[in-house]
Amino acid sequence: MNNEKKSRIAEREPFLDYFRGIIIFLMIQGHLFRALMDKDLKSGFWFRTHEYIHGVVAPGFLFLAGFLFYYTIHNKKSSDLLIKARHLSGIIILGYFLHLPFFSLQKIIKLWGTGIEYKLLRMDILQTIGFSLLIAIFIWRYLRRIFIPVIIIIVLFNIASPFIINVPDNILLASFVDNNISQFPLIFWSFYLFLGILASRFLKKFSLSVLILSVVILLTAHLFPHELIRIVADSGKLLLLFSIFRLLPQISSTILTRFLIASRESLFLYMSHLMIIYGSPLNPGLSRFLKESLSIPIASLLFVLLILTLYPAAYYLNKLRSDHFDVYNSLKYGLFTFFLFVFLISRW
Image 1 (cartoon, rainbow, N blue to C red):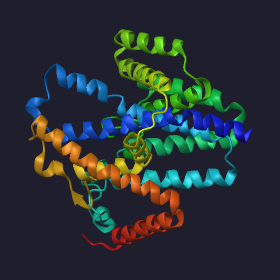
Image 2: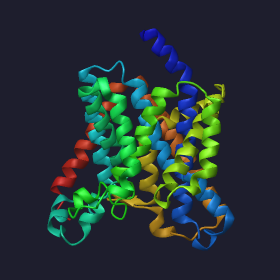
Image 3: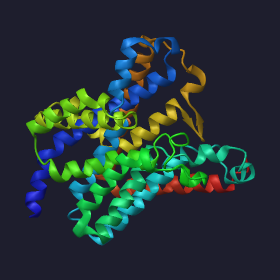
Image 4: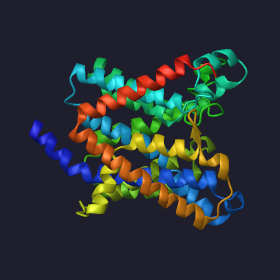
């Protein structure tokens, strides 16, 4: 049984790597163009097309997270699930770190209630992935016999959420459901992750019917109620990409292989490019100095430079993780401890 699963995983590695690779590539390019390109250039047919294509990035991240979760969960022991839950807790913390108004706990406490809480508590894609997978782990651990029916219920609940959810007054609870507070609130956006779980369960190989269905969905998305157009259209995009990448063979190219290996360090690429473009509590981003001022050629050149910087770093980070996991772990926890200590003792 184990050999069979390993064989299936090996067969699907090209699809997973291609899917993840293109999503991360589009993510970095889209964020850089939106943040730095001259606002007068953000109009017309070309930019609407750009935004339509890039609209698949966030749903794709969530979809892939759900797909990989269900695909790899079957051989997990209880201890492995605890390790996974701890890792997901770290991802949630990193998500909130990016929203810290200041890198000082004392200053945050002092200024709490002045509006900074809205910046700190809003949910981004990392929190949505983290909380959604923690929910999936809980269901798998305690409701395994009805795991898929429960996931289907959650998917249907997300679809219905625009019609049945009232935003609570509590800001913390509201951040989970209100897209005026959070860019990626858990309710609604977790739909894509749980859809990925269902795809991993039921779409085990290429299906012409799914490919045709994805095209039909894309062509008819505008016929649905306004509240559902985005979720329907995004689902069509995901299923279309899912079907296309299923057809691609494994390509033996050193450059492509290194690119795909680097893409496996998706958390590093996500965090690092956001810190460079938008900044963080630790550093100002490029957007502070170049916001909406670049031409398309200059923005493209900057994107190429960013890729040539981040992808080699991600490749060697993956190599360090694979070849010297203990060293990698020591560095990771050492950096976390150092920054946590600075955050706790910093006065301003």
